[in-house]
Image (cartoon, rainbow, N blue to C red):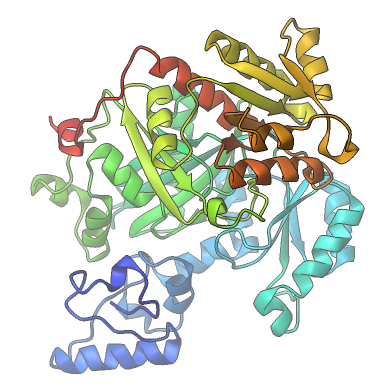
Length: 496
């Protein structure tokens, strides 16, 4: 094991036979390979790059190709290079969100003139969605391009270039985002480890979004299409081991967002949800075994996902940083993950929120403030809250919308920016609110809501910043009623 970070699980002394604390650079990795070759009497080791994230993938092309176990460096580049990836999807006739690459504002304006706003703007080759932005107009685009030119290593290395362009894609508003983890062996057989539906809509980073397996709302035929697309992409990339593919589903169209021929952060979740040791299976496949052989020896078992639903939720650090706006977006904020398992999606989501330190309220009053696009779904949230016997307070715009459809609120509160009358921040500080639902709209809609969300975090009041999470929360509360929390071990869930 080579790792420069002593704070990770992989550097536990029980994880590997030998552990090297070395920088993950070409020079240092080659030195380790030379030392391991000498220790093995001149036999060079195989190097697994697919279990360590983005940094090892970049190193794959810098070490002797015959030493890379699993997917070859050329295949990794095919998935990473924007032009090659676009050509691959066009060849397979798999839809992608329209977009392009830009090295300056003029290029960006040309792209946007063809695809329209809003767009997702992001730098090439970054982890965790760093510096990603959803841009709604020309002024925001100019600001975003200027920021990206000086962002991090891009700024230090001379800004944007043909080798490191900005990626600009049409933002698919209201899309359902889907993650797939799969394993392919050298015979071409593909194992779909899990198809995960995100709770939050596209636009929230996959590392911050809750997700569920099996997908709670996707039609079976959509799941089949996603599995077929994943197998075709893995075949075309000649993947040997793990691949993660992300999709966005809009209506009846399944768009592919990106593919990463490596382990994703969701692999441990899928393994625990299904009982299939995905990382071990993939490692054996990378070293030459076939899925059929692993099935025969009993390592690759059938999925135990029969009568339960598993929900993964992000653990967010905002309680330690109350001055930071907890609104979720394309840049990843989470510092950990938890999961909940139960017979239904709602009850599993309830458990996951409890584990993440965001317990859902059984009584009290809920504050609602919704962006205009979220108000129709917010109507359903308000109705469910009334069914649960919870009180509802709202800002004027949200209250007027709800009243139009027969859903009155207990109190209308003033906007924080108006400075007159009782506000949501006052109610939160007084302990009169037990749950906050506040959805921002673009950057302009964050100023008032930001103070409300920060107040909820400061006073440790459970809060959500997307209407999808609010819908999942009320579903969890409804399904939890009359069903006290029961605990079953993973072994019980996985038992034949």
